[in-house]
Image 1 (cartoon, rainbow, N blue to C red):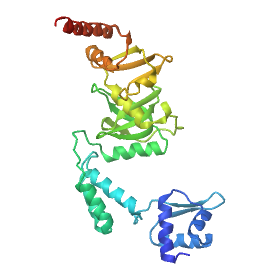
Image 2 (cartoon, rainbow, N blue to C red):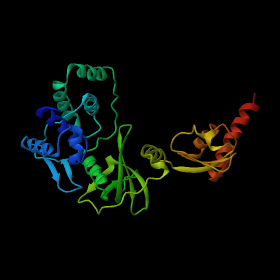
Image 3 (cartoon, rainbow, N blue to C red):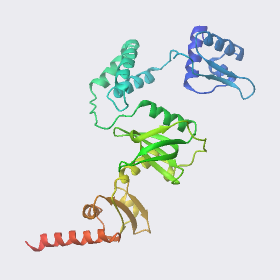
Image 4 (cartoon, rainbow, N blue to C red):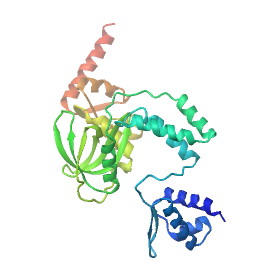
Amino acid sequence: MLETSARLLKLLSLLQARRDWTGPELSSRLGVSTRTIRNDVERLRTLGYPVHATPGVAGGYRLGAGAALPPLLLDDEEAVAVAVGLGRAAGGGVEGIEETSVRALAKLEQVLPSRLRRRVNALNTYTVQIPGDTPAVPPEVLTTIANAARDHERLRFDYTGHDGATAVRNVEPHRLVHRRGRWYLLGYDVERQGWRTFRVDRVRPRTPAGPRFTPRELPEGGDVAAYVEKGVNTATWRHRATVLAHAPADRLAHLPLGLEVEPVDEATSLVRLGGDDPDSMAVWIGFLGVDFEVLDPPELAEAVLRLSERYRRAVSER
């Protein structure tokens, strides 16, 4: 059986690791009675840890938020992960976070055991971070979005589009995604009745939050990263097209993420793509390495004809 002081630390670690625990679960983990658990919870409360208890069969214990931040218990891997994360955050990405990240990292490194300090220093020394020129996001915007997603509350915000126009959006937030220096919000736009991806640096939340909602199932297998990647890649397309590729869909699996491949039968597939102009799209289609037919738009068909004539002249003039 653990001594009282060691048991308190173990109990605190368990409460910090999971949101809810029942008394029997904690007593089983620590090898003591539920009465001892109740006494240990009282000791934690006297030390300033706000442990909430719910009576009854379905009741249990939960570590809540207090007026001041109590000490946190981290295992070795967690401590290294936090230190590395703070080092990356010091490079920017969230508005105003650089200085506070450096201060927090200095405090953490001061108490790290030497073995962990060497691991963190090695990672920071032999890792090069190239700062980007992407706009920083205020941390309160990120926390507002994250809290709304966690609590399943609709989010109303002013959104500035690619054309500079601002509109009010009413969205059921699903996930925040960090991609190549930018933050994105993936959510279901209630008024437009579809999933949308928003750049968070263009979001200005309105308060209070909207009504609660029942989370929807994300299409395409629920892969958040793939869905956002596809949305970002296709958002700025000025022209869209559909071609019939004379190849099975699995043969076209090398296509860049963001393009749509739909099998028609065992020998053909529909490929939907986009670009800034038909001429560049005509060049790109050639990289498919298979025969194809342009279904739409006519401008792409004309661009393919012009490109084929240019290639024919290049050979015939030899």
